[in-house]
Image 1 (cartoon, rainbow over the protein chains, first blue to last red):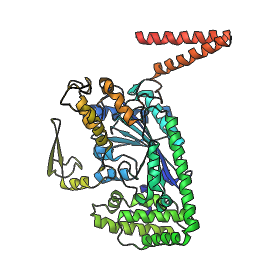
Image 2 (cartoon, chains in turn brown, purple):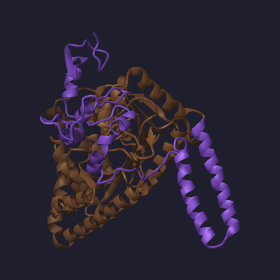
Image 3 (cartoon, rainbow over the protein chains, first blue to last red):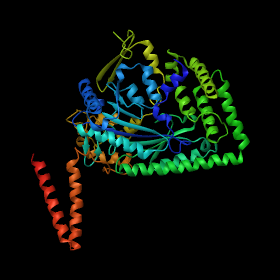
Image 4 (cartoon, rainbow over the protein chains, first blue to last red):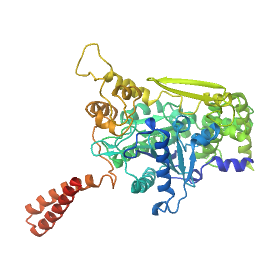
Length: 356
Length: 177
């Protein structure tokens, strides 16, 4: 497979559009957790009832239903995918690690541009996930609500007047809504302000995490900010709180970038050009170093210090250089050492493609 | 026996997991075992359920001396069979009925997890929640009715009263059926 073809597959079509504030906010995401009335939750379900869940949701997404009209949803059953294929879906953020690894009878319905994925039999029967580039929380909530309403036309949800949408985990009950934004915050990290911002965000009832969610490290200065509470607040209030904090963090990051450019221009340029040099010339590179250099290059593009490279390169290479993708590209299982060599080759080729 | 992961190669590794007396067997080939053992982003981490289970355990443990916190071993969900102990251990409900079965124990948990909140304030499903929607609408209409009477807008008040009667009638019928 040629690199060009592979890249086009690696990047979801929705990622190629440029969204608002995309110099700092990479993507916005909303997830709604839902369960079907009278069915035991996936954790306790047997094969028959799990398959019934899949059948009923797939028929209402692909049936003659009015709102599903323009979109074509494709179904993937987890049991039919190879481990590497599942891993690639996780690296593209299209499914959760939990669905890939643990869900016995898991499945996912995905639309053409991969901006909507509906996970079935994950922790809950239904998890509607909508993604959009840049800072577009309202838009993704609107889309998720549309799909929610569409499913609800033919399915009775597990719902209680007092507790709201009943979910498998007590942390999701109520709205079942988890909204998050993925932010690239290199200047706040460089100026050592991030360590003060994180506790402040936590105090407001929001969580700050690394790129792959819960418990993961902030690779390449990418942070995910999301709501923690789902009970006692309306969807609109939850989104407003999150959007307010994100707006503030954007302002802080811009100020820190300006501070770096004004006070330490030469040092900054040196750092960013060196990182570009590393990526252009490396022969062996570990994922952590690659992520760091990619973050620098992205900052260099945003600050117009490194011209001639497209903005989407970070998004692309962050995903392309993950172990699952590297192995899929290679068509074989690779040792960590082999992956470091492949990663270096891939990054060099990709940047060369850009300079052509 | 074929590998349960790839369904292609012969399974050479056999695992048996026993949780709460429930036995699960797992057969896998060496190739897939190696794959599975590798770090899947986000999955190897300290999970929210471990954390939650820690919180719940404080509540669910059998104390040496009986106290108000004591959970009778019989507290369990009649629909899915999950006991409160199991729930406290895994931090997840087995079905929607668990919310009713463990209701008396849930408020403190929700308060801790959701910043002091225990009641839903968000979206209501259109169909399943039609009677809930109507009840809310009824409340609003009753308030409006009071206001019309105070403002001496009797024509509007009469209209509103009729709508209220209609909804009340519908809700009554819904309860009977």
